Amino acid sequence: MSTHCRLILCTCPDGDTARRLAESLVGERLAACVNLLPGLTSVYRWEGRIQHDSEVLLLIKTVEARVEPLAERLRQLHPYEVPEIIALPIVSGASDYLNWVSECVNTVEQDS
Image 1 (spheres, rainbow, N blue to C red):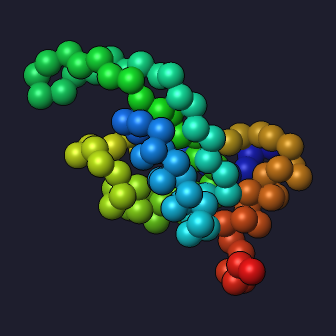
Image 2: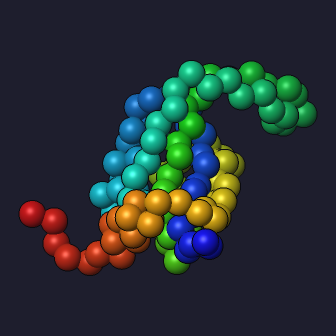
Image 3: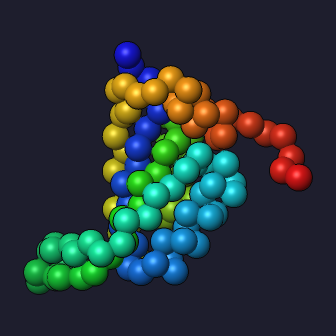
């Protein structure tokens, strides 16, 4: 079962940044849900040197049509010069959960 849902991976420098980004994405209906996974260590090359940093990984659930607007918003809000934004297709999942994801990001009604 193929779906139009997507999982976006994005690392953040700390918990406060991760929470701020998650709340913005969910609040703006670009994402249905964002999980914050602290305690991540990233090893990467930046400006010609090997770097080691503690980070928080965001697992962002959305739909295909929201990937580009979500990525653009992440670029606007993220403190990194080049934020990690990787979109993966969700090829299968509980239909009630995937329907909920779609409803959350596709609803235009006003929140109370």
